[in-house]
Image (tube, rainbow, N blue to C red; front, side, top):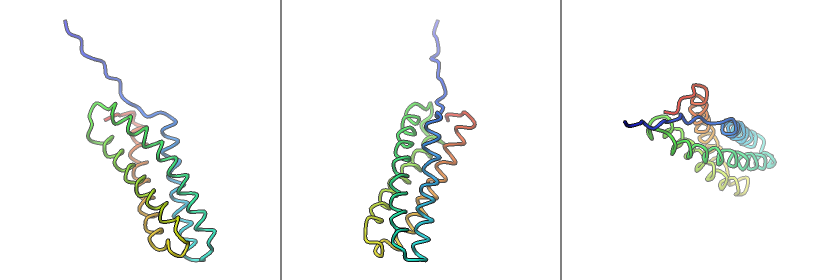
Amino acid sequence: MTTLPTYYPTRPGALHAILLAGSVPLFLGALLSDIAYGQTFQIQWANFASWLIAGALVFSGFALLFALVNLLRAERKSGRPAAYFLLLLAAWVLGLVNAFQHAKDAFAMMPAGLVLSAIVTLLALVAAWIGLTNLRSGVAQ
């Protein structure tokens, strides 16, 4: 008599959801700060964006760690877990490049900082959408 192994669906927990959802407003705040800096040229807006990006990288870094664990524990390695992990990884890497861009002089960071902030915000939003829909449905595809 053979017994089939029991697979429990990998379901992201509340901490994973908080970290994932917490990175989106921080990246969005950095984007809005870059827009405000582009219109007013007040250097403090560039400083705000730098700090918001640093906080978003911390949140999304831990969410990326959770996504990697969920990807390794998933029954199928393709589909939503892989897309979610790759989107979050792309957002984190481009966010790091954006942080380096914002470390420059305030006048030197524009317009590349604004463009990177927009791209990273969009990637983080899509990654959060995919990750949180997995949370809601309880599916670990």
